[in-house]
Length: 413
Ligand SMILES: [Fe+2]
Image (tube, rainbow, N blue to C red):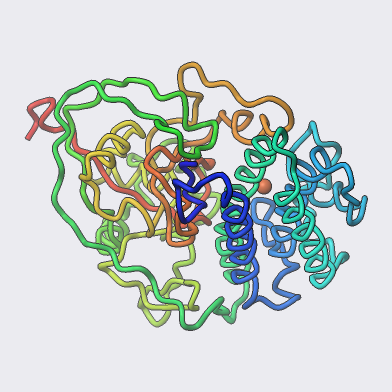
């Protein structure tokens, strides 16, 4: 099958459906595990238009299976509540009208318990469909199921990033999980050489990918040196101490406007307590660890930092070529890494047909690509061709950076 969702990728047809039921239960269960530490009150709040309530994530991922898998492919399916399509459709114009995104936090009904019942209802129906779909319908059922599970994994990450943003509005700095501890970075300081060459980037092979990862195509990369490690808090503190946030010469015009409008003086969730920088983490307020990779910085901040350091952010092609070559430490599992590549369609990109064609393609404007994966990304969800994307001012994700250096290319060193 070539999917990261199944434990056995070479599964035989007779056991394939059982494997999919297991994968479905595992992914659906992970969403509930991530929501479990949160009270019903925690699950309602929406702290900004970009962040959604936990309860909404739990319901929206369920609506996704109802709208795109059960209703079109299960003739006997009974919709749980016809009002939910309006409440829990995110942005699929082809799937009908929807509630305004910035007002998701005003929806107190259905309550968290009713959303749990919605999940149970849809879970049972999906498992029944996996079991009973006819041989002719199975490939399409499996295709939508796989998209639905990958979609739900994306929302699992958002459950954590969105609740952290909500907790950051609370002066008591609540902890999502007091036992949580940050993953350890490898603290590499060296640079890897990428000699000039033509490389293939984009998704290859028969495993799962989102449509924005293809088509694979050839690119010219290098010569360039790319940092094996991530930029650390220690380096970021040096940028701050050098008046990095006040020096307009370091910033893009839009970036400096954001610094002034938002009052940015440090990465997101940084708070000075008794002269010492602290950061709100999933475990609550903790002293900033100088050795840890910097996180919660926007593209604008990452770009200004690179300029201050006399270096650059990598292009997404440089990142992918280096990652494919095993030259990057901490490529996954700590922070997404900003690239200086605009989020654009690859040559020959075609969105898939129908409402699911709205998944990625219509967002290919005004956003920047991030590569890798963060500590909030579910296990097995990341891959080398994965393209994440956010607006350049966004910093509520676990977003950091690594640098590239072109000095040798221009004989500057
Ligand atoms: Fe979604």
